[in-house]
Amino acid sequence: MPSPLNPNLAATFAPPVMEARRWLDGVQFPPERPLINVSQAAPVDPPPEALRQAIAEAALNDPQAHLYGPVLGLPALRAEIAQQWSADYGGRIRDSQVAITQGCNQAFCAVLATLAGPGDAVILPTPWYFNHKMWLDMAGVRTVPLSTGAGLLPDPEAAEALISPATRAIVLVSPNNPGGAEYPADLVRAFYDLAQRHKIALIVDETYRDFDAREGAPHDLFTDPDWADTFIHLYSFSKAYRLTGHRVGAIVASETRLAEVEKFLDTVAICPGQLGQIAALWGMRNLRQWVAGERAEILARRAAMVAGLGALEGWETLGCGAYFAYVAHPDPRPSPDFARALVREAGVLLLPGTMFMPKDDPAGQRQLRIAFANIDAGGIAELMQRLAGLAR
Image (cartoon, rainbow, N blue to C red; front, side):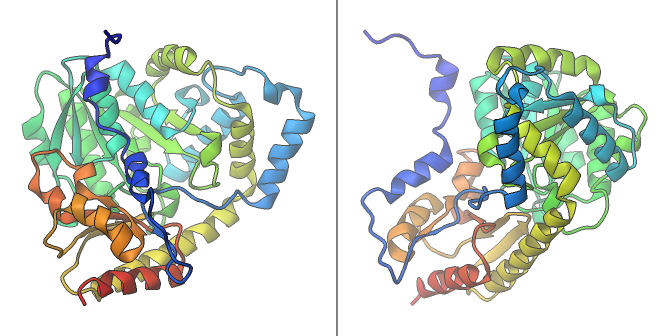
């Protein structure tokens, strides 16, 4: 007999992006109609040359870059985050309230490991980021779905009705993956007040904050002198500096919680990769203007997506922002079938809404996520032509 499997892991769905890539097996894309891959929210271009040079110099000349480092990350990077975030959000963050992780997914897993175990519950707005749901399933933590309304915005009153003695946290992602929604500051504050009243955690994943269309701080939670009692902030350097392969993320939380996070990180990875941290620190100190240019380009692509989708007959844009458009499609086929058929019928790879929704929620059958950050204005125009051509 085969050795046993952890039932929680065995019951967790397969990684959606990997599943979608398998749809490409055996499909040929002619030169005049190459594949348009809008399935994954990750930069495909390398970091800017100056940053690559900084990485190379560290690899060649800094012996410490190849050794174990502190479990919670390089002190200089933690200090830089504390200083810049304090200025950006108008609050006070101490170096000791910052930890560095191997990407933002690990940050989420580490934080949840300190908050919840088997039998506990965590509230996720739908559509949710599938890796958040996967980790909760693996850990035996019950996911409580919170339906969203107009603009894919969650309702604090609806969330309050879902809180039970088992609830440990509410998780928000803003700008949102997969929906693209940018949560208004007063909405984030309302969720913070809700979490504070019920003595649960509010986790806000701000991986895409560098591409928020709004100016200034996206919320004011760090201005509360007691923010660390309730609020946990997550961030990724992958998108802003194109460091996806280096896996650098961050947690901002109380020192007490980070002492528990340290146990998790020491067991899983011992320490974050040194070269990635060196790159993130160099980027924070030198690439603010470059990131502003990247943001302007993403906002231009967002505008092109909104205009293009608005001209497609029968399609409805449910949300659009940062790297994502989340749409309702007019095809009679359920979204998993339609998404898979798009590979052959249109040369387009995207993800069905069912990958971001509970199995029993029928809304996912009519929805799709389009991750548009890696296609320029010409690519977006071509995508719209192919989608429009399906109706002919």
